[in-house]
Image 1 (cartoon, rainbow, N blue to C red):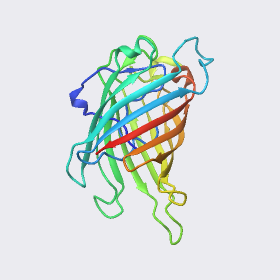
Image 2: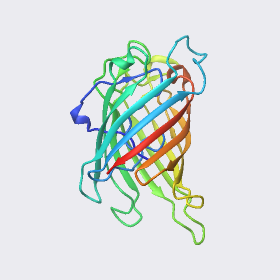
Image 3: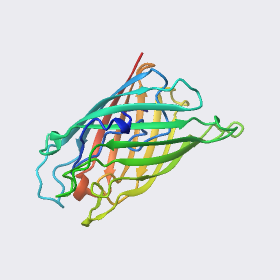
Image 4: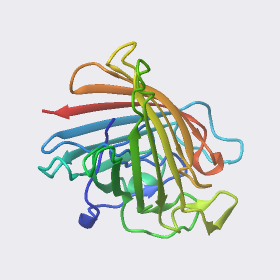
Length: 267
């Protein structure tokens, strides 16, 4: 499952991490980054929509648009099998001033697939996302540049006789900007790190087109969430994720969302 990325060194734009879902991601599971990387010269376009499951959270008095849209390309840039890299950028629209004044962000990822270092070695990936200049935090959510750095490992569980693989397990850690990722109960306190966990599997017993996943991002900040969903591949190059997002800190992130994520690869 993939979405949008661009190399941090370009620092090409500003991003506002809002009082709502925080997007601008590299290749992902549903919410968190994955160890998957776009192949060389393959251009990926991701179009993600997040629809609020209910209205304004009781913990706030804010008024906000219910929907969030994120669109952006990713492209693989290294012609190697054992070391791969993708870069990209995002345009995020939230229809909630001042967030839409800074809609762009960049991200990148570099890594190596399973079994590439030695037999049975896990996939490894490191990268950054929500990359942009920080403007500080005058109020929760009115910030830019989460500048999240992360590292992940992933391993597909082996088949055991007639028992098929139970899927892939991923685990990692992230750390972001202190001014952007603050504690839900104390806006002067940073809550800018946490674990990344996921399980995903192609449900070949039903159809090779069906993929399921659960992922989790720790941290008492706007990004902390548990996400459950599935994807259906309509063709070799087109798939859609359907998922439900449960936010840990609704005072920052808003109410839970339903998401649809359209993924298109060229060629």
